[in-house]
Length: 418
Figure (cartoon, one colour):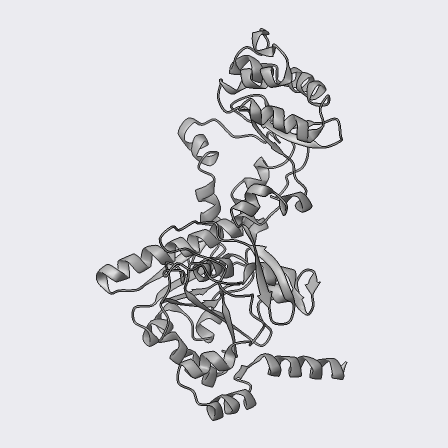
């Protein structure tokens, strides 16, 4: 993919090196964003690789979840369980600015990558770890994923239909929010280091990220004592707000976070509901929400979806179509915002990944590289930190490191034994 012509096209983090020793989503995706912003991100993996390389649909011999989360990186295979490999890591770490991991203790220390160990190689390192619950406290050390964090923080209680069971979010919201905190923490620590010369240890947890996101629900309860309840697609505070059917069997979202929007709905749908005692203000509409939703559904069913959305938008109503995935990837605003961008993969050809969600006008960011194959840049990275080709071959022979060719050879050998 060609880079913009802007002389600052390398991005705002150009010149920084990030080591990604994390797996799955929250850590790796935080490192990915730093790569999109111009940092040289080196993903350091075991011979087994990131767990996301083994989950989900295949494209060629690569898995969809891995491909979707790990662009803008280079890849090095390094067996940190071997002491000699930890010496190699020390040389690489000495060149880094930020390290991201989600390894739990005692494995963290056994692999030689806890904060004090890495600080010995690079005194001003910014060391970021993602855990489920935090580095200490009653839950410290427990395994955790997005789903569990949603349970602990009440997200599951609030999500889903009021008459149905608790439902997790349909995408890994906790992991994605945590990934943004990872990159945000790195940027804040880099600013401190620029002023003081000191790096630092940073801990980010799924639990804390989800609590931070619960300000409007848990925070309101703490402030007022009013317990939040599951509302499905409705709002606790205003009406109408929900999903409404259309004549062609599709659906739209219509919501009214403010009194001024309801008359707009009425004019767009050709009704005078705003003069009806049952619906004339927010309090009345909340009291009569079932009836309001019924009459609105009757009216929205008189239009095909596209016609209805156009009418509502023209009337300045807050509305959206409920898009299927195949609609999302064709959405004109998403395409205009470059939130779907092509990457060229050396083995898989061109495919599309999500884009960079921050628009820099002075130092543009972009997807820099395809998601790397396991060990794809091992030789390149080792050469950069001073290892000769003979040294690299010796490391390979000992199983300390592996490149793409070696990983394919090992894979073929495993298959031959079956």
